[in-house]
Length: 133
Image 1 (tube, helix red, strand yellow):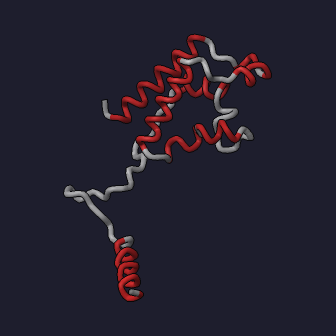
Image 2 (cartoon, helix red, strand yellow; image 1 turned 60 degrees about the vertical axis):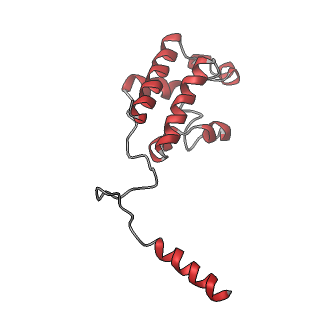
């Protein structure tokens, strides 16, 4: 039994050292995000003002950092990025972001209707672009 287990363990370990390729000869990653999310300057300005304070890797807001970190957006799998972008549009449609508690402390960081529309359009277009539509 030990020999069988050891043999299987060695076989699985050996497989880790092989490069798997597609029929075209391209190395296939684990569905990593090979596309970069483009954030236009006008969108970046809105994100910096109203979103980035909670949604970045260095934020003290653990919940905001866990839900979405703009710093890590280009390093997660494509399907997860599409989900995050879709979530951005959804929370803006529902009026959940920025949260009321945040706006009570920083009313100047509220999103105007135009800002919300700009962010929703960017998130929707970026998600569709990543999905190949």
